Length: 445
Image (tube, rainbow, N blue to C red):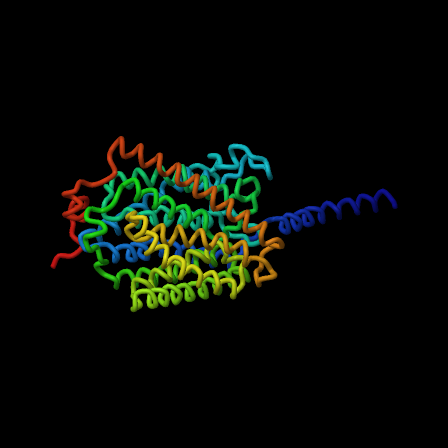
């Protein structure tokens, strides 16, 4: 090759090389998936819809008329409070993976750091996702809605007797010390304590429902019974609200479960299907159990069955098949019916709106049965090959969550009670929290 030919080849390569480099950059650069993004945006709105207005109406209809606004107000206030705390430090505590190592127990196995505090580094171009790529801002908001509904569920356990100011402070501390660490341990990925154990929790059976149910049980025990419970009639004042709220929860839950696939894919489709099957089975299971036990099916019963089925299928939605969903839902409807009614009556605790009976018991049942029906041999789509071993792992996750949540919740409540008091006065309770705490009435008739 002559010097002139060599120089010409060099010039040609100098022109081609930037193009090749540009092409390589284009291949390497992550590309946002608009379909997955659209589904996650929709799911986020659906999960928020579950709290306001869904849960607000569901709980609001079950209390007495003098307390309807107080329960709805608590749901709305929690939505605002947790949204801000999530932005300041909650997201970072739950999903910052700094310092995490597989099967190495350290501080970051229990809680994330603060490198993402104040949502540092999150821009319109920030992209997240393992197999699907969508904006990290959408993931932040999606997980925010989970953080919102979890403490809001606790409201049902102490309804009609807790001071609004004490409720706000309790929820802020509980979110910080209980919700964010449990979410981190289960969902942050390799290095999270329960993740490394192999606990299966697709959409929040442990993080949301067992967590909230156990906290609710502890709260109702610490606060004590409502004045007049159980001798004074305390019937729901507007079951129409409750049924509408339950319907909103049912619809919104598709975002809760199918959205947890973090993509518009087959897993999301199957999660949607098993959610519908399990919910329908639980509604009928509760209805027929009540019918056989008390002689008549009730509207409150079928609404409660709907929520029990939604709760129980939540940890399993991404790994079980249709028949697994059917069995889980049916079991949840029957078991939660007897636990929410018989157990509370026998033990005498005042879980006002059955937060523990439905969310705690339903979450525990669903988490354990996930270890059974996630097995491909029983129609599941998980990687479970040894059912007994996976059930033991699930039981360990359930046990850890119960113990951790119960102890920390108890300490928070006892300290707050000593510092500022938790309950309204007997006079305020008799008048109703709508007037006593908010100077408003739900109805001006």
